[in-house]
Image 1: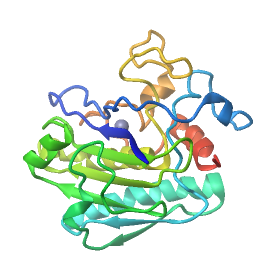
Image 2: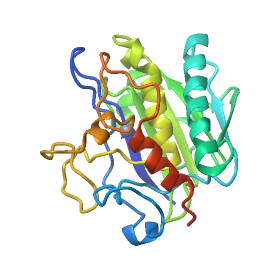
Image 3: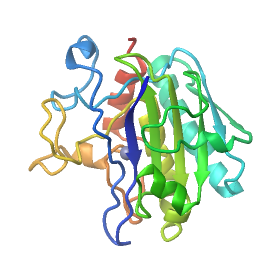
Image 4: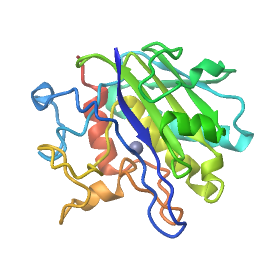
Length: 250
Ligand SMILES: [Zn+2]
């Protein structure tokens, strides 16, 4: 088992873009051929997936009680949004939320650390406010959120955790629900709607490519979000790819 993907949301000046995810070098695990036969969208989206979450079961999502009541309400709203998509895509809800204390060990010591508690059928959403913890993970004050996922081969994600740094969102608190909605997209196995590194991966559109499909830019899973363009509902690209990811069986 290894950490195969890390997502962060990078905060910049208030008026423009907020970068939403930086990946580690572990790369894609799912190959295009593994999605053949599924309706996975355009040819430049077939590599826009990570190891899927096991959506055959209802995942238990533990929300850190250190979040404020308002933050918990927004997390639950984002979970509800994904559950609607779960019903649409699979016929059942995919998340069951509970607010329950999480251990300090729920925060990995670094972005490759898979020693944190977890299992394939459950994950936590943890509030992080310590800048040193965040720095040790390799993120900056510009990153409001991260999803750390551990998996092997093309199997289901075996363990994952979503970390939200509310301190880093203090200057634009209205992005909070957009960020958690986005991170939950990573939790089900969606990579970004386009590749922010512009590495020209066949099957994965680069975000800077001229003519990048507007639906990729409008998506919740677009790797940039701003305080003036929050996204608290799923868009067509998110829904199409979610249907694919949630129905994928390793
Ligand atoms: Zn992201």
